Image (cartoon, rainbow, N blue to C red; front, side):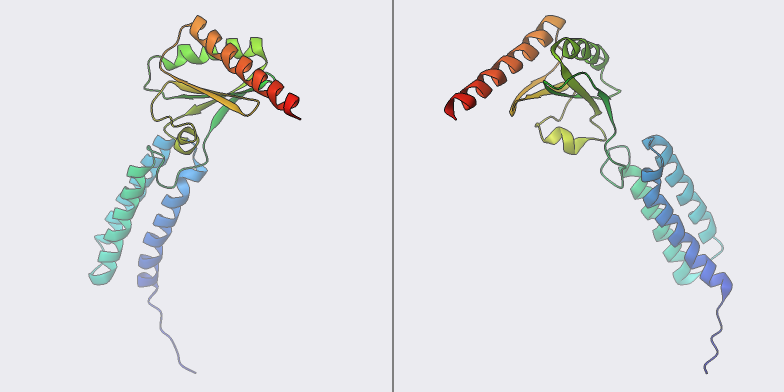
Length: 194
């Protein structure tokens, strides 16, 4: 039987950076706030960097690489591109006539007012409103071709109406009424064809 001598210090110095990168990858899934996750990854990278000062040779290079990997992950979190948790949404359950998908961002000065107008108008028409932060829901926004805020899409009876930019209450009402009217006409045509 061959006796293996394991250097515990070296094993720990390899395991800690690997554990740090693994934790940094999981952090956005565990913490919903992107900036807290980014700060956590930055702290992990600093810890790995400080650990690497006590190492030599290949272990030092491995630790530097691990710290750099954590920084790259942290840079990608706010944009939602790297290791981000599932797309968060606020749902206003208002009815079943259709769905309004609304995309906003916290840096958009017009988004708050448009969300209020949409929710109020949708409530009157029996529509469900789903509000998304476009920074974290790029996949959902790309389904409608949205890359800016504020934007919304009305899905009713397999027909979609899209609109971007700030709208007045009257414009929001007209867009929602038009979407419901067009989709109802389409539904009537389909029933007549059968």
